[in-house]
Length: 230
Image (cartoon, rainbow, N blue to C red):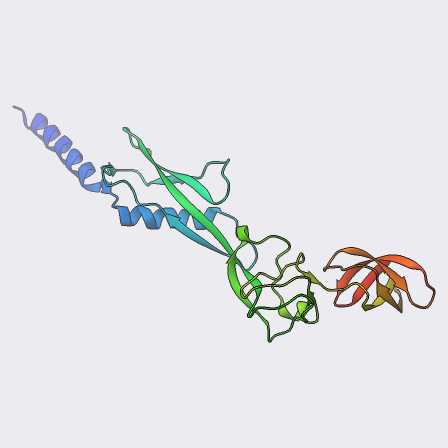
């Protein structure tokens, strides 16, 4: 056999060995971390929120194959935001893929009651606190700033740990005095009125002007305050 043929065979054998050595076998712990990092990078998170990512255990009967290429991942476009099947792909000459179920929770800072309170209770720092809660379990607009809520009242009995939302609080309560602010650019007039219904932050409610007797509609902008934009 010529020296050239021997050299070619040795080179080919070296390439086969080199490729085999460079192929990576990804264990389950690596895939778990890889999937978590991918989900956290590609799933939108609300301001100040956090993601809790729970990757399902890969079936022990599945044999994880080696891969020369870098693994890629993909989240289906249509998913409910909480339960997804992340697709792991090895794009070798003999490609393979794997679907791994993942549970995603979005937790956000949320005002909750720190004790049991009854309907009509004035909310303050003594009976509420901020904790992280699963946003999917909260109905109504999530409130997270204690300063903005101090002085509001509960519209119903609330057990300890209940989320404080626009649905169970009134920033302006029916029959209570309110400040009416009528304003336009560079112009503002304040007057006093009486709320004709409960209202949460951002809601438009009817208010009676105590001086003129007129009933007007204003947007709740703060505790016991409505705004009319002229």
